[in-house]
Amino acid sequence: MTDDARRSLSRREVLKTATGAAAALSLGRSGSAQGTAPPPARGATMMGVPFEKRAVVRVGVIGCGSRGPGHVGDLLGIEGVEIKAVCDVRPERAASVQDRVEKAGRPRPESYAKGERDFEALCRRGDLDLVYVATPWRWHVPMALAAMAGGAHAAVEVPAAVTLDECWQLVDASERTRRHCVMLENCNYGWSEMLALNLVRAGMLGEINHAECAYIHDLRTLLFDREHVGPWRRLEHLKRDGNLYPTHGLGPVAWYLGIHRGDRFERLVSMSSPSLGLQGYRDRTLAADDSRRQETYACGDMNTSLLRTARGRTVVLQHDVVSPRPYTRINMVSGTKGAFADYPARVFLDGQEEHAWQELRQKEGRAPGGIEDRFEDPLWKRLAGPAEQGGHGGMDYVMNWRLVECLREGLPPDMDVYDAAAWSAPAALSEQSVAGGNVPVEFPDFTRGRWKGPTIL
View 1 (cartoon, rainbow, N blue to C red):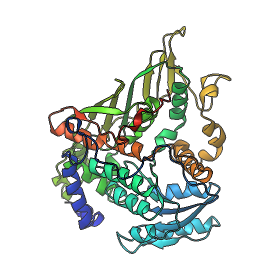
View 2: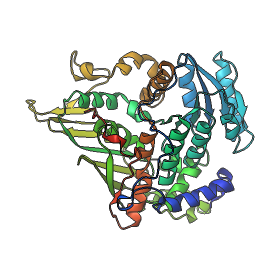
View 3: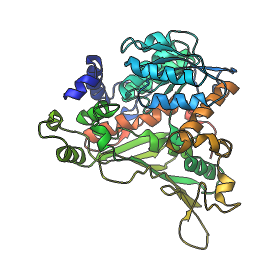
View 4: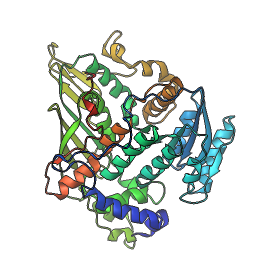
């Protein structure tokens, strides 16, 4: 392990990395091998279960380094939120978020920064409604489990889990504690993603039969950064070969297909290209005596997975964070009457005079009464102003605003623990498929058959 990795990961985290990688290549209790039945339920389903209605949402935030402060900034601009506690392994980071809350005219939240397990004390407070988990991937599940065990709902950064066993742990804990576990998949709340969802639901694209999605993002500089997410996230490439980060692309597509709302992912097959990009970038940019030059990366540069649903629809899912390519999530969905694709957002409808894409515009250049006006989501029409101050083009703010609204109004969450598990599972499943010579693997039914409810399409 490199010097910066030693500084960034405790012995416990190293052990988690090793055992987690091994678990990802085993079926464990996945319920996916040759049609194996899911494990017995630990409680009633959480599908469609509403939050308890409350006037003020009392929030705790675990992780004050990267994503956590962004969520805090959004929450400070949303009515009916009280940030009561913050936690980080670095006391100065927790103090920085405390200062930010206080400067906004709110009561100073209590800090939990006495080591890597102090999050457990935050979760035991008993006065929190919602706990945000914005930490390295390997800590997502233990922190979400602690939050739910302590009586709070969990809002977990992506991916919610790394192994199939972890996915089942989240499902079982949510059902047992009657607390929701919501994955903070901000891409589902992007302007173009929500517009595409409205096109699908209105039947504009006909019967949906295929979708394509990805996370293609050149992260080479970040992966070799000695601070923030660089060290721990690069370590994932040492032992794992598959789609390490599936949810940004797959989450919106799962909504288009009505996954767990009349359909489910049933099977996956995956393959990876050679591993070349990360070591090539490292050798060109790092000093000759840098210990990271000794690392060997297992993860292929491009991983491509093909998913099939119970209704026979297909999804192409890709992951590449080490190649010099422009950012894209592809975000394409097609049906019997047309198709939508992103980057840039555009639509093609059957029967239109010109056989070419119609580009869709979020702001300037929109045609009055056009597709943008007719199918732009009401959330974006309402929140466009404040959303512009949030991260990732506003989708972060819209996501957080909507989650708070569901809690305050006593509504079911838009995304539940079954979605968190299913959208995260392709990481482990792709590793299984690649390790087995690109064999098909069965997709666990985290809903235990309850996905067969009324379709939304």
